[in-house]
Length: 136
Image (cartoon, rainbow, N blue to C red; front, top):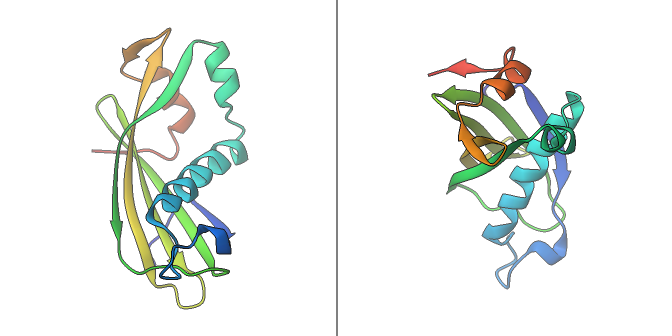
Protein backbone atom coordinates (compact mmCIF):
# COMPACT_ATOMS: atom_id res chain seq x y z
CA UNK A 1 0.00 0.00 0.00
CA UNK A 2 1.33 3.44 -0.87
CA UNK A 3 1.45 6.42 1.49
CA UNK A 4 -1.68 8.53 1.97
CA UNK A 5 -2.46 11.74 3.81
CA UNK A 6 -5.65 10.21 5.22
CA UNK A 7 -7.08 6.74 5.87
CA UNK A 8 -10.58 5.96 7.09
CA UNK A 9 -11.68 2.53 8.27
CA UNK A 10 -15.24 1.63 7.26
CA UNK A 11 -17.43 -1.48 7.06
CA UNK A 12 -19.79 -2.55 4.30
CA UNK A 13 -23.42 -3.15 5.11
CA UNK A 14 -25.44 -6.08 3.80
CA UNK A 15 -28.03 -3.83 2.15
CA UNK A 16 -25.27 -2.33 -0.03
CA UNK A 17 -24.80 -5.68 -1.78
CA UNK A 18 -26.46 -6.80 -4.99
CA UNK A 19 -27.92 -10.22 -5.88
CA UNK A 20 -24.37 -11.52 -6.48
CA UNK A 21 -23.43 -10.76 -2.87
CA UNK A 22 -20.94 -8.02 -3.72
CA UNK A 23 -21.15 -4.32 -2.92
CA UNK A 24 -23.07 -2.54 -5.67
CA UNK A 25 -20.80 -0.27 -7.71
CA UNK A 26 -22.75 2.90 -6.83
CA UNK A 27 -21.98 2.49 -3.14
CA UNK A 28 -18.28 3.03 -3.75
CA UNK A 29 -19.04 6.65 -4.64
CA UNK A 30 -20.63 7.05 -1.21
CA UNK A 31 -17.53 5.60 0.45
CA UNK A 32 -15.27 7.93 -1.52
CA UNK A 33 -17.40 10.97 -0.68
CA UNK A 34 -17.59 10.07 3.01
CA UNK A 35 -13.80 9.79 3.08
CA UNK A 36 -13.31 13.25 1.53
CA UNK A 37 -15.77 14.80 3.96
CA UNK A 38 -14.28 13.05 7.00
CA UNK A 39 -10.79 14.19 5.99
CA UNK A 40 -11.94 17.78 5.55
CA UNK A 41 -13.66 17.74 8.94
CA UNK A 42 -10.64 16.13 10.62
CA UNK A 43 -8.53 19.03 9.35
CA UNK A 44 -11.03 21.61 10.62
CA UNK A 45 -12.27 22.57 7.15
CA UNK A 46 -15.95 23.32 6.77
CA UNK A 47 -18.05 23.20 3.61
CA UNK A 48 -20.73 25.29 5.31
CA UNK A 49 -18.22 27.96 6.40
CA UNK A 50 -16.74 28.08 2.90
CA UNK A 51 -20.25 28.36 1.42
CA UNK A 52 -21.00 31.30 3.73
CA UNK A 53 -17.84 32.91 2.33
CA UNK A 54 -19.12 32.30 -1.21
CA UNK A 55 -16.73 29.40 -1.90
CA UNK A 56 -18.10 26.08 -3.13
CA UNK A 57 -16.03 23.04 -4.00
CA UNK A 58 -17.85 20.91 -6.58
CA UNK A 59 -17.16 17.49 -8.11
CA UNK A 60 -16.73 17.83 -11.88
CA UNK A 61 -15.59 14.32 -12.80
CA UNK A 62 -15.15 10.89 -11.25
CA UNK A 63 -13.19 7.99 -12.71
CA UNK A 64 -13.51 4.73 -10.76
CA UNK A 65 -11.61 1.55 -11.57
CA UNK A 66 -13.10 -1.53 -9.92
CA UNK A 67 -10.45 -4.12 -9.07
CA UNK A 68 -11.71 -6.58 -6.45
CA UNK A 69 -15.24 -6.62 -5.00
CA UNK A 70 -16.09 -6.12 -1.38
CA UNK A 71 -18.81 -8.25 0.22
CA UNK A 72 -21.23 -7.60 3.07
CA UNK A 73 -19.77 -6.93 6.53
CA UNK A 74 -16.20 -6.51 5.24
CA UNK A 75 -13.95 -3.94 6.87
CA UNK A 76 -12.03 -1.75 4.44
CA UNK A 77 -9.67 1.22 4.38
CA UNK A 78 -10.61 4.21 2.28
CA UNK A 79 -7.50 6.30 1.57
CA UNK A 80 -6.83 9.61 -0.10
CA UNK A 81 -4.25 12.03 -1.41
CA UNK A 82 -4.83 15.35 -3.13
CA UNK A 83 -3.06 17.12 -5.96
CA UNK A 84 -3.67 20.26 -7.96
CA UNK A 85 -3.71 20.62 -11.73
CA UNK A 86 -4.33 24.24 -12.69
CA UNK A 87 -7.73 25.18 -11.30
CA UNK A 88 -8.66 21.59 -10.45
CA UNK A 89 -8.14 19.72 -7.21
CA UNK A 90 -7.89 15.99 -7.77
CA UNK A 91 -8.46 13.50 -5.01
CA UNK A 92 -6.60 10.25 -5.60
CA UNK A 93 -8.62 7.71 -3.66
CA UNK A 94 -8.14 4.00 -3.13
CA UNK A 95 -10.13 1.43 -1.18
CA UNK A 96 -8.43 -1.66 0.25
CA UNK A 97 -9.94 -4.70 1.93
CA UNK A 98 -8.48 -4.52 5.42
CA UNK A 99 -7.98 -8.27 5.93
CA UNK A 100 -5.49 -8.70 3.07
CA UNK A 101 -4.87 -5.08 1.91
CA UNK A 102 -6.07 -6.05 -1.54
CA UNK A 103 -6.92 -3.05 -3.75
CA UNK A 104 -10.67 -3.00 -4.41
CA UNK A 105 -11.18 0.41 -6.03
CA UNK A 106 -8.92 3.09 -7.44
CA UNK A 107 -10.50 6.45 -8.22
CA UNK A 108 -9.73 10.00 -9.25
CA UNK A 109 -12.26 12.60 -8.17
CA UNK A 110 -11.81 15.94 -9.88
CA UNK A 111 -13.20 19.01 -8.16
CA UNK A 112 -13.42 22.65 -9.09
CA UNK A 113 -13.97 25.73 -6.99
CA UNK A 114 -16.74 28.28 -7.49
CA UNK A 115 -16.48 31.71 -5.88
CA UNK A 116 -19.78 33.55 -5.69
CA UNK A 117 -21.13 31.09 -8.26
CA UNK A 118 -18.34 31.64 -10.79
CA UNK A 119 -15.59 29.23 -11.70
CA UNK A 120 -12.29 30.28 -10.11
CA UNK A 121 -8.69 29.10 -10.01
CA UNK A 122 -9.31 27.91 -6.46
CA UNK A 123 -6.48 29.88 -4.92
CA UNK A 124 -8.56 30.54 -1.79
CA UNK A 125 -9.02 26.82 -1.20
CA UNK A 126 -5.43 26.00 -2.14
CA UNK A 127 -4.18 27.90 0.89
CA UNK A 128 -6.10 25.47 3.13
CA UNK A 129 -4.67 22.44 1.35
CA UNK A 130 -1.16 23.80 0.83
CA UNK A 131 0.67 21.31 3.08
CA UNK A 132 -1.06 18.36 1.37
CA UNK A 133 -1.01 19.39 -2.27
CA UNK A 134 1.19 17.86 -4.88
CA UNK A 135 1.43 20.04 -7.93
CA UNK A 136 1.25 18.58 -11.41
